[in-house]
Length: 157
Image 1 (cartoon, rainbow, N blue to C red):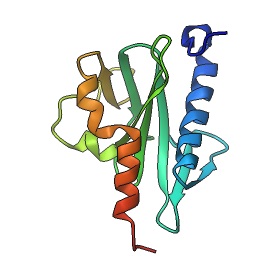
Image 2: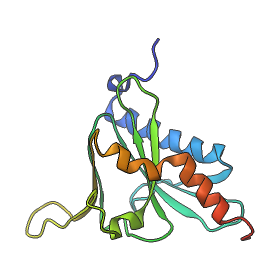
Image 3: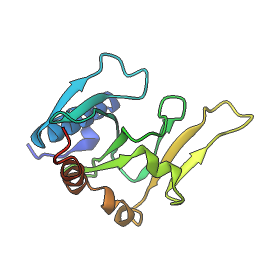
């Protein structure tokens, strides 16, 4: 059976796969990973490298270019919060990015803030993924980002 047929999975299966995939990638990088029982605060799991501070991870996935968002009331921009974005494009291996929440505090137009004043939708932080914007995500590729995080904490116990 061919792998990476993401379109054959339902939304719940895709979400579960993405969370397990990200958890295992963190584990493979030497992090201790702790799951949350309920994702009611915008955090899917916490992780820690060695004896350093914990980081909080929210996982989102897309099966094709599109828009992902996190509700502002649950995704509070701070140093220890990250978005793990998993792209599950047709018949391709998963592509993983690790984006610090503070990216939304910058001036990059790729990271959007929507408040929907006077509307039913809740305020959100968003990210529009297109084939042309993928190159802009390269600085957030998972493995180089993890290596920078680990090397920044060398000697800090």
